Amino acid sequence: MTETEIAAAPFLDIPDVLNLRDAGAGVYRPGLLYRSASLNRLTDEGAARLAELGIRTVVDLRSIAELAHWPDRPIGEDVHYLHAPMLPDPATTELAWPEDQAALYPFMAETGGVAVAAAVRALATGSPVLVHCAVGKDRTGLTIAVLQTLAGLPAADVTADFLRSNLGLGLDNGPVPYLDAAGAERLSRPVEATHLASALARIEELHGTLDTYLLNHGANTEDLAALRTLRPA
Image (tube, rainbow, N blue to C red; front, side):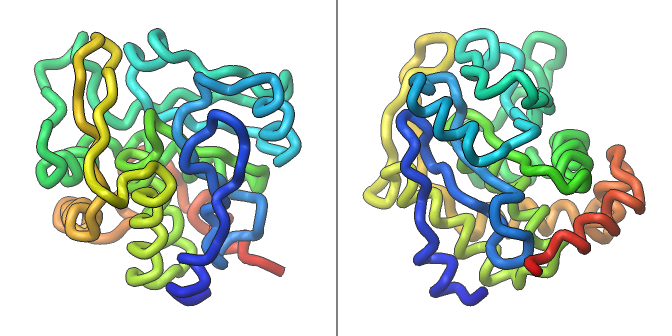
């Protein structure tokens, strides 16, 4: 799939689910890997339409506090919800989340390995997976970029798909304000190619390869091999 084809791939119009799209990008079978913002605002109509996608696992990369404040709306009794926080819990660690995105991305690479490996294991089952965080651009963006890279998507196309979140979230004209779980106003900032590159470079610096990074955080060789069998027919 070329960069132009990725840019033309549609967002899925399901009520109250932002930035929802098939993230297979031509290297995974259609309908296998989805990404979005959180599911806490799902309507009855939206839940029914999301269930029609056949999703079997929802990988939620948010913190415990975010889950408590904005719990996902269930989309089906047979859907497994996997909580895999990508950033350290402020209640149990002194590690603070960087406010600056340039610092946040390599930080996510350092702290999020277990979460990314959990997404790998979920996808390796071959059943449809939805990966999301709060707004579906930073934590989700890095996780999806790793999954796409593992399946052989060229770096330029991984980046092109990553940048589409700006359009999906209305960030193509700049930052947008929002209220965090504590009620404080913050800015949701556009994603940038240099930030994703810095996270992937940090993974390589610390672990040498993506495979080693994931093996060091709970994935196994069978999981990694399985991902490479999930290409389009």
